[in-house]
Image (cartoon, rainbow, N blue to C red):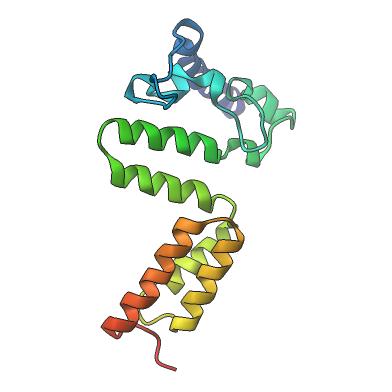
Length: 168
């Protein structure tokens, strides 16, 4: 069997499986308008509410559209709004720390991937001065990543107290 045909069949099967319940089961938000565990998995129970980062409906994703160039790499990424919904699901089952991680991920979507890797490396002990870390925090503020910026500022303070900053 031709590899392209096999790939097409696999993608179609996955998309069909993900969309099956979304046409049959319309989920409801909790009384406070939040997404809960009852709405999980989102791709099945709330597919009509999910969008790509470029605003295309989740249900519009197909192998044929990728091949035709109607969908690009940016359409295959997760949107911050979807991560927020997932954070609400996590909170609804008492997983507050995981919800916080999802919210940080949502705000970091705006930061280019290569820069995120640089920031990650800069946060390792002895890799940055306090000023380097404060500059990163200010940069994150510019991306509207306030929670992550606060985390980097906290790291700068802790590293200073524990002697984990780069020696100049």
